[in-house]
Amino acid sequence: MAAIRASSLRQKTVIVEKNHSLGEKLLLSGRGRCNFTNAESDMDVFISRYGQNGKFLYSAFSRFGPLRTREYFSSIGVKFIEERGKRIFPKEGGSQRVLDALLMQCRKYNVKIMRSTPVKSIKFKDGRIDYIITDDNEYSAGKYIIATGGKSYPKTGSTGDGYEFARRAGHTVTSLYPSLVPVRTRETWPKLASGCNLRNVRVTVLVDGEKVTERFGEMEFTNFGVSGPIIMELSQFVPDWITHEDGSEAELQFSLDMKPTLTNEILTARIKRDIAKHSGHGRFHGLIRSLVPAKMVRLILELSDVPEDKPTDYMSDEEIAATVRLLKDIRMNINGLWSFNNAMVTRGGVSLKEVDPSTMRSKLCDNLYFAGEILDLNGPSGGFNLQVCWSTGYIAGSVN
Image (cartoon, rainbow, N blue to C red; front, side, top):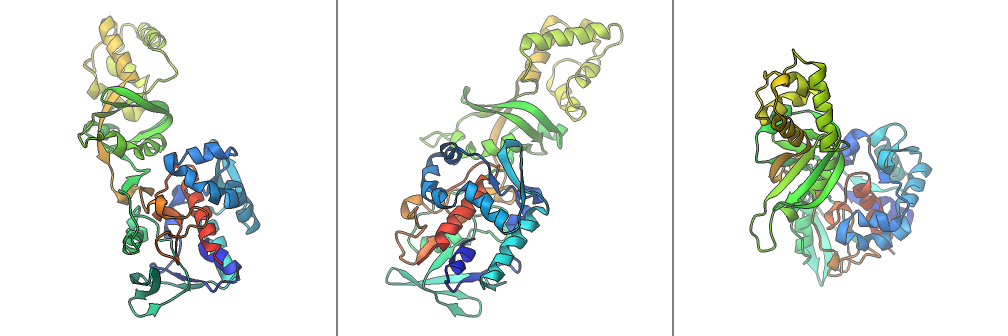
């Protein structure tokens, strides 16, 4: 996006690309479907999805925001559809369609692309970048844009090179964490339901026993913990929750409510009806099978104190109440995140205090600009992170 914008303004533009092919991370977005923006029309609401750093984006979004993004991609042949959560996807072709359209624009505006050319070093002189060094040559330009991505999905080439380049220019890089990533639990029992995708459940976050937030939607159990849309969204805050301000460790728990639309009383009544319906031949394991997905049965039986073959006619009121509590409050102790190898985006990056939000130009290095994930900007899934790429790329490329 930065190269297309700069070259459309008649700037001679070169992309120095580490990989042989462009857009490898883009091809992975949305599991290949490419949720490239979001249709949220209230800009204050849109900005709020990026947390405290979101205000940095007001200027960029005022010039190339979500509406302009949809118009732009439509104009270059990417028709789109809106799905649940106001997520915008290409109508056909997925990520490859978006990438092909961008590469076509690069050809249209004569952007030179140097493939398989990782930048090894950057040389500075008098507060400016003087030239860059690759394996086989040195290259100089009037202006430079670092758009290397972060550290997420390093197999795509985003191994954090840009952070070192930024540090060499004098920039502060904030603490880096994987974000939009599966979460690890201290317990090993989640593997009993590995691969089980749960819809319409509620996850409540407890820090030292106090509720801090909750999410409703889809989640999934894995061999090492939990994943899925609501877990991935919560993951961006785990580094804050898991450690107190004084550096001591906090007790972070996720509470899973598998029946969020039912009160304890209604669920109790349902269980008693099921017991009466199967009077004389019902067993506890059969009762659980009627209440949870098949892949969850073994896990629930493992967590329950009721013997799985116990006749339901002989279940006490306390055992019924305990079963209700279990289905409404499955506690998981969170002890960290999966690695950058599994993360959709990087949390943290080049300090926004050192970048001009109206131009994306470094305040420390006169001819250096930044775009995309390398900046200390990240949002939830739903098209928010790619929107940062389009907007900051467009602004960084709007050089004089």
